[in-house]
Length: 220
Image (cartoon, rainbow, N blue to C red; front, top):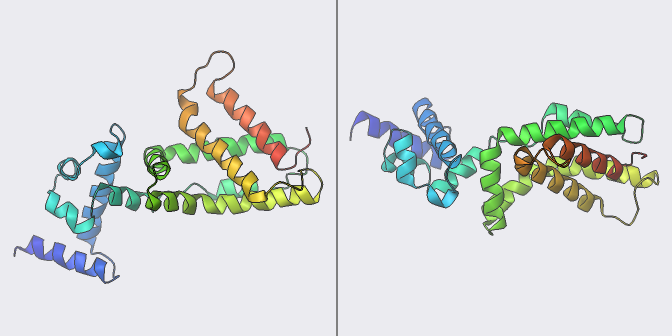
């Protein structure tokens, strides 16, 4: 066994026992993740093979399998470091939506959310497609990443209901889920929207912001 092989074996043994990978193992693992994401920018998940990833990362399929069972697992690893929130987004949603300025805040919320989502656009699109095709791992990843914002929006809906601004019969979590569905779809297809007939990206963001503000109790 060569020294390089020994390092790889030690790294994977450490991973299996719950210990941190060594520096070399971490670099190799990240190179494989980065290569996977780069390939997914122009290929579907089912079109990317382990051989493709290994070649792009300038390593071998055998090395890939030291770290991942397959390409989907590399995507799931990439998702572990992708967030659908940020301190700025959390601060916006935490505001008093019953106070004046909600429309402006809602637009800022939409702009911030879509910007965050599109930073991780490639893997979020792959995640959502895989989840919708019934892969429970990607569905759980999607729900886990959405949950913090789902909770925050639900709390604001309940405040609006208590103030009589939002119908009491609506489920707060269903309202929050609807808001996130709007934002995810807007993030995914908005940049490709036509700029004619009032359906450009900015127009869609403005319409989404108004709907969200109303959901959270803003006065029209």
